[in-house]
Image (tube, rainbow, N blue to C red):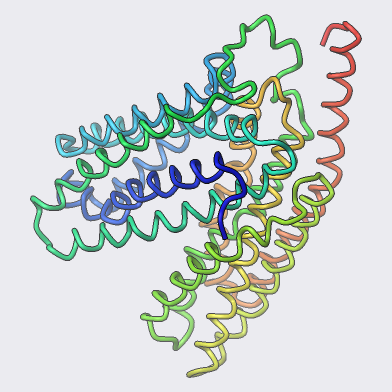
Length: 410
């Protein structure tokens, strides 16, 4: 029940603290943006889209920066910048300022995530890496739940002055998070600033197999779209299930993610093991589609039971996809360019799932059974494509590092 090493326990504690601060603000962000910043729902969506597009193009460059300044240093600077930016939220007004703020926050998050990902790969041995990452993921779920509770209490007051203080309180928590990060031990590679001339292996963008692999992994990660968007909309619009069931669905997802993520990660520390986890994830995804699609014609407790079961199975897809993702990025990243490879994985993953909310919602709600079957088929094709992509990515790394060790130009 506890992380396997002292470092894993420290990182899990840090994950809880970060998620409390982030979850505290995110829970009330919709109300904050509309009532305090003065935006419409359409403006909020547009601002988030602009920020996402900008960060998409900067994912790999910011990963390269992490390799040069050191992943831990990049992670700490990103965490500090995020906390300081949160302090400015109460004074942001209007769409232009909001969009600019979201762009900067997304860039900071992208940079910090690249540093965090590279640091955790450097800090853990291969044998303990995936299990430790699973504990950290469980810790994040615990923290987000606690943060959501705090955010809900703030919203319950329905007072603007309290809601205005939420980002300031979150900033205080995130400043403490920065302190914890800065006190983490140095990783094997993490704090050694690499000069550009030392990066003699080709960049991540030349590893086409890796990009294709994480595009397919991004398609597999659309389980989050099913979990958070499609199934809730389906429940509301196409079934007779009570809307209060949504709270039980998300509560079940959180509990299962905390309790079962470590178990789901077993065996995912190798490329074959990670691909096996991806296949299991796809199977759960398809099973969820098959279960939920029949609830259009069921009634009463049968509908409730089936929608709940469909949500549980898509949670299984989430847990095994996460485990497979960690194994693949751990085994198929160039150790000299881990920050850059973190950015490339983010690039491919975003391309693989950015289209899914609109496409999956249309297919499920407008097409019904054929739409659900097409959603499932999309994931099956993606997981099949992951296998040759992984082999190509592995050959790319083996060829380049053998060339480097032989003194050949890379």
